[in-house]
Figure 1 (cartoon, helix red, strand yellow):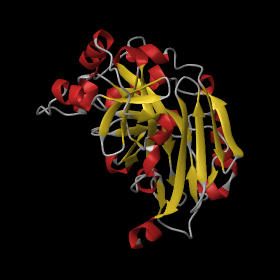
Figure 2 (cartoon, helix red, strand yellow; figure 1 turned 90 degrees about the horizontal axis):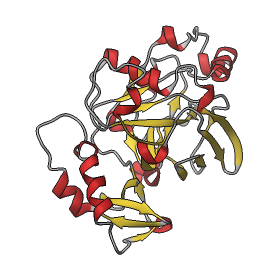
Figure 3 (cartoon, one colour; figure 1 turned 45 degrees about the vertical axis):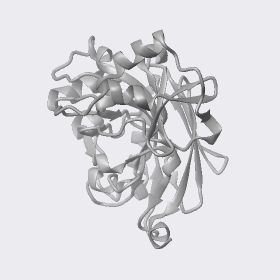
Length: 289
């Protein structure tokens, strides 16, 4: 099943090009308990079971008419994998505009990094750049949504803890500062257009994806080229942090990263999920509007 948040914060089931409003069901099944993590994702098995027995009958709107927000509202953390494709590692090491004359370590030495959960948005909200004098890059990647609280998970069992998958954009301001600092401004973690449940998505080990900016091909790869696979990333992250329902793991981007500016449109396509268009605007312009 494909689940989304849309328009004014409604919850929806996406099916056959339409969005069915399931907000009342979500409210019934996912009260806000005093537990860490996202209440909707925590209640997802019960919601899926209810919709399997009693599917909604009338759509709220078409996919084309919906403004998609992040399908996850309250993650406790956004975990991200740096230079997790060999081609991007080579790209980062060879381009001073990316590395700022600093050594770019392999992922096993660099470790994972955290992005502020306040940076999380959906494609309908767009990306707001803050520093027009600095380069701001797109980074498309498969995003994994954790479904069950876990710690010290083995690679063999890691996928059992996944609620679903979505397209991720890990936006990045280039500069000498720490990764987490440059990648955590508001709107710099895009997730969407919806979350495909793990059972519907299947194997995450060979997923093709593409990113275009204003129609120009920028990035194209597939997850078979990941240095650390999805199960390995989940296992590794769980050694360092307790993962909670709704936590998101951004699995890393391939080569082809490039700058975007006010007015650009990033079209992201990923097998098994779909397509999302993300507009870029200036934060300063938006703030003055």
